Image (cartoon, rainbow, N blue to C red; front, side, top):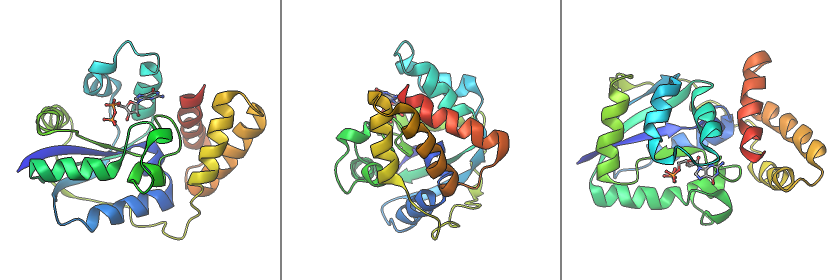
Length: 207
Ligand code: GDP
């Protein structure tokens, strides 16, 4: 068995229907074992280290903000390396426009790199990432607070995707942004400053 790191990124952690769907997808698996899971607000330095191989890419500052602006749900799992490869395959490709129909990211990711879930992509990265995060988080029990709530909340994935494509292309940009904010608000339970932060990190991906 090999360890791997799992993260409900903000677009999964705060979209109630998406997180319920992803949580169900995880619970139904018999090819891995969750050894820890909890909400955790990651410091910027941890995200910078986690994604150090992407430092220098134009989207890196956004990525660090995206992953550190609000608490996310982080977990540790154990699986056979071949099973980890299969779970990664089911997760789908990084860029939502290229993600395989039926994959988890195609189903719940919004657009571009706003792709709902992180999962270590190999035994090597799993060992490295779980070791790094273990310096900040204790993986001592599965605490899926609020993850299962929200099965009855609206799921605007496909409308958000189409609006994000327009926004990114600069077509009806203001209209698209306003409508995205409305839909994001309907899907989440965030309010006030937290909602503003959430809207900033989602829309910021497409600037
Ligand atoms: P992953 O293993 O599929 O998550 O992909 P990578 O390790 O290559 O990238 C890490 C994360 O960076 C992705 O999951 C995305 O959230 C983000 N990312 C990667 N490429 C891009 C990009 O071209 N644009 C944006 N905005 N984000 C990206």
